[in-house]
Amino acid sequence: MKSHIRNCLRAISVILLLPLGPALSGQSYTVSDLGALSGGSAIPTKLNLAGQAVGQSGKMYGVQTHAFVLSGGKLNDIGTLPGGDYSSASDVNTRGAVVGEANTATSIRAFLWDSSKGMQDLGALPNDNCSRAFGINDSDQVVGYSSGAHDPVAFLWKKNTAMTSLGTLPGGTTSEAYDINNAGVVVGTASTATGDKHAFVWTAGGGMKDLGTLPGDITSQALRINNPGDIIGSSIGPNVTHAFLWTAAAGMQNIGTLNGESTSALDVNNSDEVVGTSTASMSGHAFYWSAGTGIIDLNTLIPSSSGFVLTSAVAINNAGLILALGAVTIDRSQALQLDDTQHHAGPVHAFLLKPVGNGH
Image 1 (tube, rainbow, N blue to C red):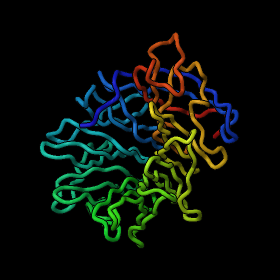
Image 2 (cartoon, rainbow, N blue to C red):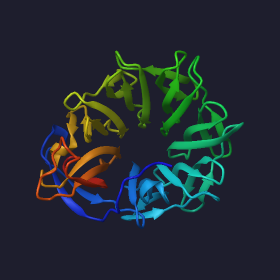
Image 3 (tube, rainbow, N blue to C red):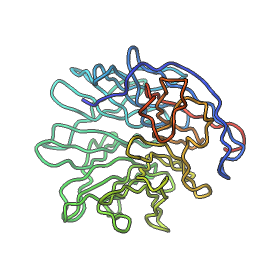
Image 4 (cartoon, rainbow, N blue to C red):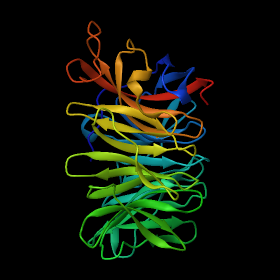
């Protein structure tokens, strides 16, 4: 199974002032450490409008990892499928329905969970035995990919119609769906006739469309789509990764970098506010982007005395709440430098940033 962040996280709350950027001017954030399930660590993945976060929590080295829902300030273990001991949540919709993956006695399966029905195995496409779910919309339509003896293929799951294949790009053999908006538009990545993987957008009427790459890049992936239909993801070249925002009007746009580093966009809300991570040789920096501010290192918007470095922002909802991961210093006598999270870094914590003031 997957490797996990070490050490149990404790609940804390601090105020972070955000002095930079026109859209963020005068705004502050309350920041809460999400904690973890008993004896473990937590990796969040997505956030809904109500502030419910989902992800996975477990002990070191992937032991006893279970999907969780953060609700009412508490992490709630949503269990596993029959015969399994592992689960991980990828997305949550407005009503609190959760999707992800969980093992059975024989394979990994996509699941749908809610508080009334518990965890449901979504099955797999014909002749496959494995599946993973990554996105859900407010109609409980679920996307992911199914695999087995053949290459993985993106699926769409609906109530009463089960799982259907979304196909592949012309000449390609593989596809993976990562998100779906409330209009039923799906995004992901799929192989082309040359074998390179490209970001795609899929609609029921038009099928799968290749979004291409940024100039000079080779591969790309689309990770999230908002309800207006704008898409974020990453375009990858020989030596660098570029975060992008795609719109129907402007196509694929490079949203910039922090000091020329690689950037990956991880989420977008309905206001086209984008969050993600910028990677350097030693560490990552969480970033925020909007058309008004451009790309900003979130670490420049928090007090230097905070004692941690935000390494990745994984989700932002329509209220402006942000889920982020941060490396915490273990040597309080020396400040944790933004370009060095290794020398004095200790546990990695998951934080929920809630905006207050006039920024939202």
